[in-house]
Length: 149
Image (tube, helix red, strand yellow):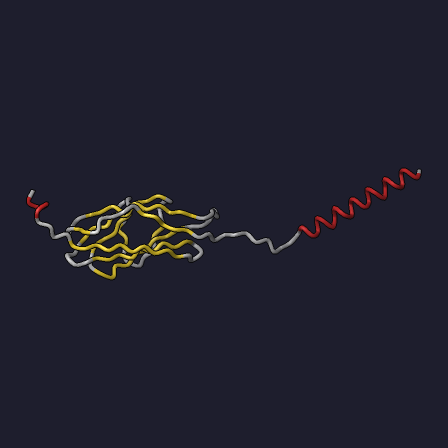
């Protein structure tokens, strides 16, 4: 009989400790990180362009972490010169309009339409408002030797 009382008291104590642990584990202030820093890396691009010449800008999105519902968008602005920027699928980007990124690896195609110096600022943002900017500058390539050959 004495042994049964001791076992009963030990089990009751274990249940109480387990209940206290479970109650303290139920914290509504669970902090789940959703927004992670990111960068966009590119391969080198030419610095001189002829009017009408198109160059390819190869881009890679690098994320410090992953939160599945995060989306990424691109927009651009051209403060100097004129030209057009396209996605590899042929979508022509309009200045200051947001477009979804097609993936973590993508290509942009810039076509020069100016003999002046050209600059494009490309902005990437995630669904949490984190923003990254890349700036590309091009000078006019007025080298006549290549055109004659």
